[in-house]
Length: 492
Ligand SMILES: Nc1nc2c(ncn2[C@@H]2O[C@H](COP(=O)(O)OP(=O)(O)OP(=O)(O)O)[C@@H](O)[C@H]2O)c(=O)[nH]1
Ligand SMILES: [Mg+2]
Image (tube, rainbow, N blue to C red; front, side):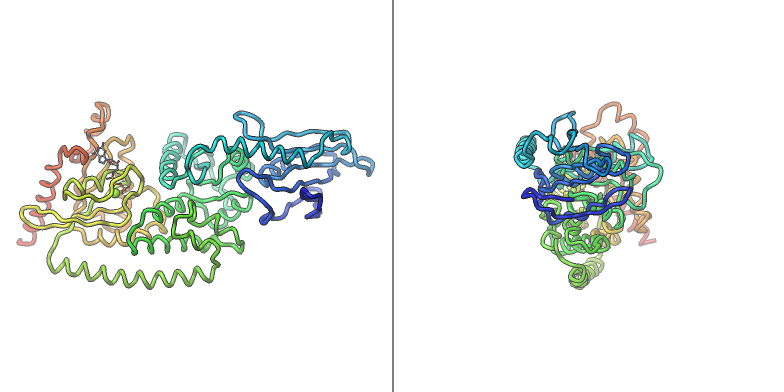
């Protein structure tokens, strides 16, 4: 039975010898620091005694007031077991169990006890909430790739989370050989993660691996906090950073497309899975929209985007007629692309120590050999870009198609510079632009030490610092050389 604090029975559940299945408790009170207001009391008929692991994980995941079992002996109630959650305490236990000879031996009034406990939990949780973050997350990376790879990925995921104003409370690496199609990682491990997350006051779990609709739904059903994956996190960042109408629509479309298959007839599933992380994305107002309305919205966005795209085509035609050459600055996110654009064209586009600071391509001009050329700043690349994200990039990708050459910027202070270069090259390969001439630029050379210097020797590229201006002359000279080469070709 589930019993509320007034003593009314809200659910009667019959199980079998394997156990009981507690129904969906959505709609009953909940909150980051509150308990559910329901206690579960069930009989134990088999020879098993006390409380099982299952009992305790249900207690924690559903945030029940208490889990109670009554053992049955000679068809009469005998030993009474009780478990309740404890306030967060570093290194402490998550719950406490008590055993009594019979139910009447419990020495306190349960309602008063649970009210005090709840206040205690709330007080201690609030004490730790000193940051201004909107959400608190546990990050999970599951793969067979080993510790070093995992920690690098988790670090990047943490930077992404911070960009979305999410505080990271725990990072978990789970080594697995094969993904579980139903819930990515084993159910036991998953429950463990979720419980420790709740205990740390997490409001969401972010998976580095992209979740299939089935996985996302199964995991979200197991618990009361938001479950999202890396793609959704990146889309949330896009939603926050997009500034132009086209950019915003593009991101909303990508979010809706990602969400639609993940909506499985459950009202709250949407708010858990949608953008809406901090409630600032375009997803925010659509939280409770149903499938049909999402579909309508998708087609309406597609129509608007078609119009915008037509206008872009016209602009590109005009440029072609004027025979304006376009150079595009590309590279991994946060490499310093916008800083370089500003340096080369003396402009002031947004620069920030954030991932995906730039979303909408901005174009400025400069003169090379007395000829006017355009320079485009683009959205940064990142490893494992899923198709939904590429969709949000459409305007940028179109810009790239028209480019005369790319200036590929990499952050030379990054210890994994080779991976960064490859991530960008892989994307160029995928979009069929690997043959466009490229000028490789190793940026942030003001930051590197002797050790890094040695490592960089093997990488052919211009050493520059977009921040200090060091080596910038070489970049313009390379751009000029690249222009003369094409003109020479054209004449030949
Ligand atoms: N020390 C140093 N910092 C730099 C240099 N170039 C850029 N930065 C810093 O690196 C951070 C990212 O620079 P951005 O120009 O915004 O990088 P971006 O590649 O446009 O990044 P996204 O638009 O987010 O993909 C900022 O904090 C810059 O100030 C450099 O040459 N040296
Ligand atoms: Mg930028």
